[in-house]
Length: 165
Length: 318
Image (tube, rainbow over all chains, first blue to last red; front, side, top):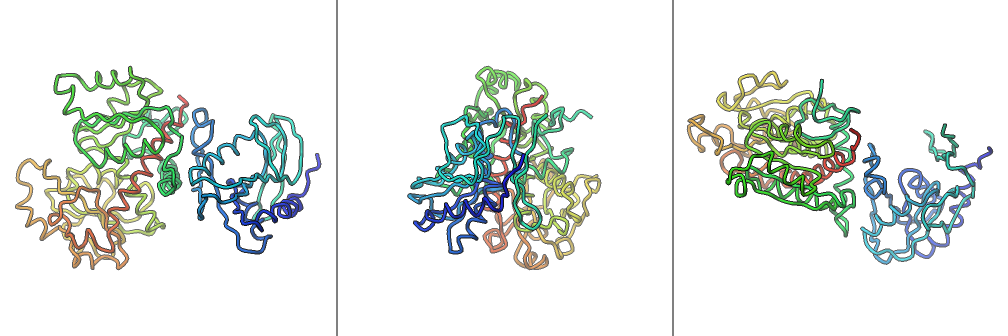
C-alpha cells in the first residue's frame, strides 16, 4: 500500500489550521505524534502562537485493563485555557478514544472556547461520535492494521503501516 | 526468589520496601511522579485513574503528615478514602490486625496504606490479602518507609538531576530511622556514588557499613563538599535508655547550623522528612533558609504517592 508523504500532509494541515490561528486559537498536541505535529504547525505559521501538549495516560479508558503506560510525559498547557479557542492536534484518528481522553484532560485546565480537531490521517473505525474538522488525508484501514507516525533523528516525519499477525 | 512486592511478570504489586526493587521500577515511579506534579497546578486538581476504587489508610501509629499526603494523593486520583486510626478504634477492644483488614475487604476496599510500629506489619498483611488487593507500607517500625525514601530521591533528582555525580550526607538518628534505610537503598540502587552517614556511634546500627555507606562521627568532616544534606529527626519517642547526654548537647555536635552547612557545597540543598525538632537537629535559620527544600519535599510527596498508587492499581496481572 502506498502511503502519502507525511511531510506533504503537514503542509496541507498547516494551511487548513492557519485561519484558526489567525483568529487567536492555541495549538494543543496529543503526545507524542500530535505534539510533533503541533510543533511543526507552529513553526510553519511563523508567528507567535501558544502551544501545549497533553499526555492522556491518566485519562485513558483502558487503564483498568492495561495499567499505566510505562513512559508518561508530563502534560504542559502553558497558557490560560478559559474561553480560549483550541486546535487539538492528533496524528492518526482511529476509534476516537484518545480524543475523548484528551478533551476530558483539557477541560480540567479550564473551560475552553471552540475546540477544533485536526488529524494528519483519518483511518476510519470510529467507536465514539467524534470527527475531525481538519484532516490531512483519509486512509481507510482494516482493524488489524496499525498506522504510526514516526520521527527520525533529523526531525523528519513519516507514516508507517504495521500489519498485526 | 519470590519477592512479595512483584507480580509474576516482575511488575510492582505492593510497595513494602525499596530494598530488593530493581532500578527500572524506581525510575518508573519517579518518572511517573513527574507527570503528577503538574496536576496540582491545574484548575481541577484531579485525574480519574482510581475512580471507583476505595483506599484505606490504616494507621496503627500516629502520623498526621504521612496520612494526610496519602489521603490527598488518593483523592487527587479520584479514589474514595477511608482513614482509620486504629489505636483509637477496635484494636483497643482486642481485634487483631487481620480481622481489621478482613472487615475492610468485606466492605470492598481495594488498596491499603499501612503504618505500624511493628517491623514487617505491611508484609504480613500483603501475604494475607486476596490477589487483587494492593498494600503500601507507610512506615513499619524501624524497617522501612518506602514512599518517604522515594519522595526524598525524587526531590534530589529535581534539584540535582545528575544522580551519578552526587555526594549525599544523611545526618542523625540512623539507628531508629526507617526513613534512613529506605533512603540509603534508593540512593545506592539509583547509582549515587557517595552516601555518607553522620551520627554518634550510639545512633548507628552496628553493621551500617554493609548498606554501602561511609561512616562519619564528626559533622565538620562529614559535611565537607556534599551536594545534599538529609537531616533525620531525633526520634525522642523511640529513645529508650540514655543514648544521648541531652538535646542541647546533641544540637551542639550534630545540629545543622548555617556555619556547619557552609562546609557543604555552596549550592547544597537541605532536606528533612519532618516533623522537625527545631533547635535539636536543625536550626530554624537553616530550616527556613534559602537552601532548604523541606516544604517542596512535602509537595513532591503527594506526586510520588499518586505515582505509586496508580502504578499498583494498574498492574492487575497476577
